[in-house]
Length: 219
Image 1 (tube, rainbow, N blue to C red):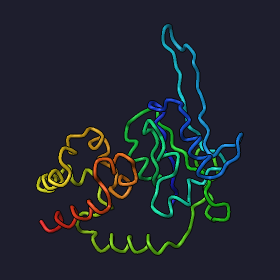
Image 2 (image 1 turned 45 degrees about the vertical axis):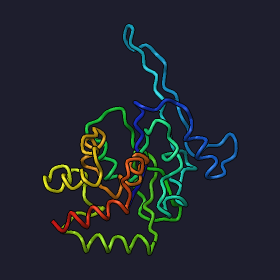
Image 3 (image 1 turned 180 degrees about the vertical axis):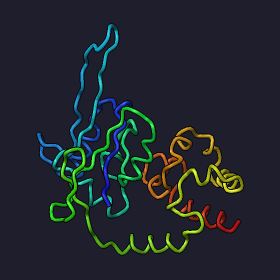
């Protein structure tokens, strides 16, 4: 399953926190980068209209922080992005999250040089990582057993669009249904959403969602 980084460069300020965090996390020497912030512009493309953008670009040294992801954490660049302009997840989940929004770019770095099944994405070689992880296997089994009800595989929209369930969600997470960010992420699965910093800040964790799912599936 291919995973990647979704960059919303409309919000990137060029602070380079991602560069620093990546270098510290992975021990990358000065002058080398796992992710590099590139500046586009400034230039005047129409009278009195200028473009100046910053785009963080993963390099060949990026492995999506496999050592962090394997223990349930986000890549260091995503975790430390000051503008909350980066997302990590499967390619399918990130494409869903993009929706019709503009000024976004999806990168799928090469993460395992020994893996098979090479595909091409945006001209960059990408290889699907095949790795046995007992913890993940156990979670997937639990999800399959709960396929008929709400689970981490459910989307935020599954909750928003269901009257009784949305009321219960409001009880567990007061005020969140009115949050425009939650509305905009209606197609996002909870399993991906809990990896984002804003989820924990809003009290949405695997533990609190588990309690909510248990009560919701008993309705």
